[in-house]
Amino acid sequence: MSLLDSMALRMFRYGDGWYGYDAGDRMAILRQEATQEGYGYRVVIDVVDRLLLHDWTLGRCAGRVQRYVDMPSWLRSYIENEVLYERRRCATCLQVIDEGEDIAVHSCGIWNVSVCHRCKDYYDMCDHCYGLFPDTEEYNNETLCEPCLEAVVRICYTCGEQTTDWRSVAGHSLCEACSEEYGECAGCGDLIASESAYYTDFDGPFCLHCFEAREEQDEDGDDYDGEVIHRYHCGHRLQFRGDGPLYFGVELEVQTPSNQATYVAERIGVQGDWYFEHDGSVYPGFELITYPCSLEYHKTQFPWENITATARTHGGRSHDATCSCGLHVHVTRSAIEQMGRDTIAKVVYFLNAQPAMAEAVARRASSYGEVRKKSSVGMATSENYGRYNAVNIENSRTIEFRLYKGTLVHTTILATLEFTDAVIRWCAETSSADIMDDNTAREKFLQYCTVEGRYTYLPGYLHERGLV
Image (cartoon, rainbow, N blue to C red):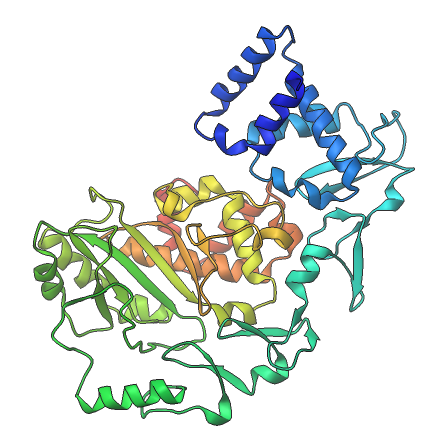
């Protein structure tokens, strides 16, 4: 195998091995290897040029470059500026584009690519992600690439019909008609027919099994069973607070002095709109989990100031803990989906496209809530695999924002909740094209956050973090 092929494989096929170096170290390694074999520095660009364009030509499909999504930014920059722009090669036929020749330049999966006038008829632009693809399909007067077609068009779980007007119910995609006939059990989360659902005097709907369990629990009195800190994911009965449909549930990890976790939890209180669970990542300590509350309820009725002050008084720590404490925010999934079929994809793309802002607001960069650039809005959810992402979309009933660092400052908690609300609402109101414009999206979003009277705690927090 030639040096060029060997370097190409190392850079792209086995890219994970390069994550341990920063950009300068990686470039130095490539330069050193090239020099040892008698090649000049330009060999790095030649490798990228040959491999990248060759793959595009063979595949005739921009989707093939998705495996390069984790390419280091310094290398992507060289591809964009040195290979595809200054040298102006057609991404399809590889011919150098003559100066003055009409070309089509489109976002092609990850990079802006040039296509000569002879080859541009091979491509169509996807109306959803704005990428340039040779293979598209028409659906409801829209041109869609294959990934967007899979994301936008769903097959109803109950009736089997294709639909773009779908709802997520109990983790399943249902058409509008079926979504009115089925619901999600408030106990186990399974899909249940509305006509066979059960309700208690206070909540529901339930399947028969969960209804009977709730009735038995109600006969015993109240929820408090004498256990202060419950086992992890104990299945506590939730009660919704405030006016929906958008509810926020907070998981706040708190470290305590040794052997004092139960004592600190008792001082905070065991019978409120929250409960405590053990968490293996926080020791000694606990995770305080709130009931799902509206943003207004969190700000005006939830006793965040008293909770955080009590925890601090008795030795609790979060932001400055010796273990990694997080502040995770769960938001009602169905409410976000009702704002627009692609709102979740927009949220995932936007937060991952703004790493500096995300890190400043979150007060950390953590592998437990990793920020990683996505190629487009249309591909954002399919590239967001696993739960340890800034936005975890693996849960059936909630979207979890995992990027935030823990804190025992109540105003920071409330500013974090307002930021989460702002991201969701701004993305719902903003087009995919504007969200993918990395030059202006952040500025427009921050302007939205600081409109007078819109948020109480967020504007001051953004100023404190140096973002406005």
